[in-house]
Length: 39
Image (cartoon, rainbow, N blue to C red; front, side, top):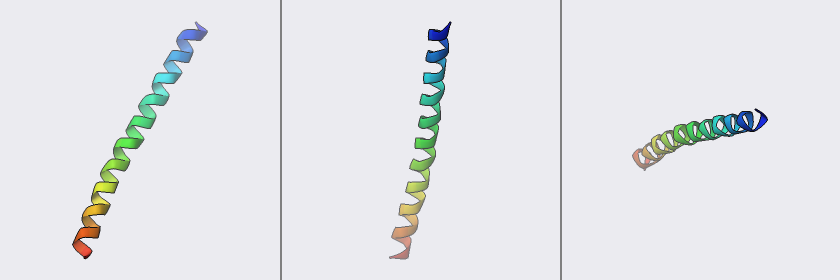
């Protein structure tokens, strides 16, 4: 039971970091676009 909980926790953390990473990638792309347009 505790092992199962640990695995579940691990996957939820992994999913959280992945979603944060994805949103950051989008923000970075938008930021790069703005930087190019300014020049």
